Image (cartoon, rainbow, N blue to C red):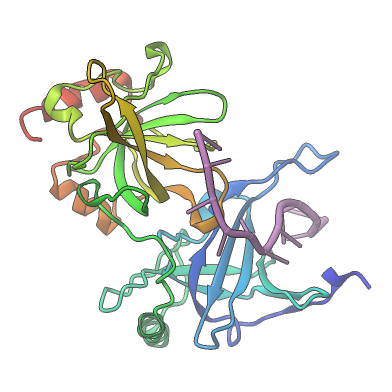
Length: 316
DNA sequence: GCTTAGGCTTCG
């Protein structure tokens, strides 16, 4: 028998709320051979709850917006009418590609507001859901289930060789080669380490090609080894970014090496690596705005970015 | 009509 036939439908009492550990971000998968239809976007999550069992959950949706709105490991997800599948080697997974499936997510921080995140206008949410979210939050903290996960760090707090998550705004980007993209970002804090210079072709950059002195000191160069399409001006969370030390020979100072830092997002999606665009309503975006970082354009042009950047000169 | 990817543990 085909193992994929061993399916059963889980109804709401079983598929309730799990703490969610995304290890893959939503990606459009390849075309179905012989078909001209676009395929769905796919999210893969590893989720757990008080049972301590970790299972993989795969969700297919035609629209990106219908996917669970997960911003970090430890977020909580409620799955409604997902399917459970077991294969021959005992790996179990939940699938969300059936009729009636719905998903709502919540922030996982203990004590925070229980705000359901969904692209749908109508979904059930009551006192029982609220209690369940709070139970899972407390459980996740007591079990330290997020300890293996990289933590959010501002640019001012980065340490060499450490993996971390960065919440920032994208100011400019340029391709380095076919596998690598340079992102120039800021988060309102200054990295205490000298950064390596990255040489780019000024004709290929999107956004300002250079920044003035004060501003320059706030900007981080990130080398991204994957195909991440992000829009200039967007607020981003970059997951599992690495600060790499490079020894640089200073011109004129023979035998003197200086350590320079370069930020890298390695390829692949293990360890939750990826980039997520944060919505304006995100608490982290509000925090950036308190630093004076704003998004004055929805579909930014180069001139809009430049005039905005020059208006920021006196505030930074 | 209802598949698709896939259950990973860090190069640059």
